[in-house]
Image 1 (cartoon, rainbow, N blue to C red):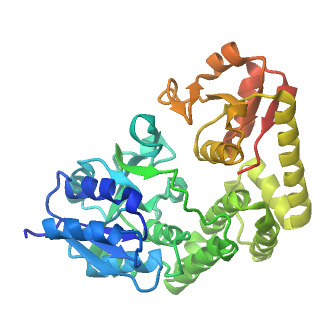
Image 2 (image 1 turned 180 degrees about the horizontal axis):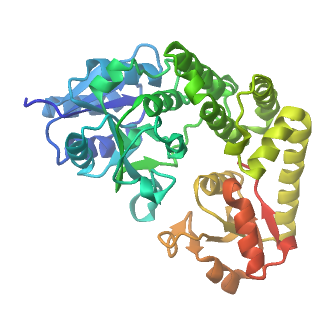
Image 3 (image 1 turned 60 degrees about the horizontal axis):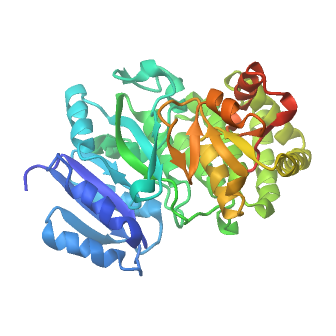
Length: 431
């Protein structure tokens, strides 16, 4: 085989339903000088046998065993065994566009990059019912097409952290001792890898081309598993330990605490109700310690974020009771309205839709309003996605549920500006 340009590491366990689409997308890449390292945690559903079929036909495919059952360990095995100049990670329930790795590799070589990352699409459904949603990799448009580093601008930590949306120069990873946390199962190990990469890389290039296709409707989830309640906490402990070991914590302390808040509050909203209070108590204790050590830069937080963090620190029980009350108010609001318009179908919106579907209430939603023109005209779970104006024109008699916590205040202001009475607007704190 010619010199390998990209080594594709694929951790896997019991993904028979998705593995063929994933494997087809990688072995048919326009970049032929790749190797495919499938690391299997002893699948029992036939996934392993399917990959063996591909390995028999294509010498670029290798099948390795993971005897620990850890996604972090699987990724690390792949990186250690890789012989490509760059390493990519591909989750085996997802797939990629045909030219993804050729595009990223070409830019990496031209610009001498440590990291090249690109836009992606999330999707759900199959066949004619499959819906795609474009996701930008950057938080600001002017970050595309230039060489960036956290040393110059820590704002790049606010960019999408999805580690599978890029490629990484293997020598850069080895030189900087960057590895995944090898905790059991598949729980947040990408957070530690992403933070280490972003902190250490001197040459990061973001590309406005969509290559990765990330599945949102895999039923496997850890949000109901008590053993996973504190997995995000363990991961941020891992990140801090690595930063301190490398003498980098002082430089990245403030952004570390801010990103920790973002991940913790997201995890809190996603947890099953029975697990929320346990998690919130630890959340509060850790943030209180950061405050005492003067490790919080309040200037990084928006006003709503400041209030939330202050409430969590001062009284986790009171915060929990307020959120529970708001959730109950939302359910009562929906019962009163009979039907509602959902506003927002980003990550929060998709989780809300899944919650409604799983609880037999998906028919309560008459349409989804969204400001993104790319989604308008499509359907999600059979529900039409329309512009806010169209939603008001067609379904104006119904109430609105805002399903975007980060943009809730702006959306509420938008709706009120359109003439929607405030009493017909509620914000979801369900997910």
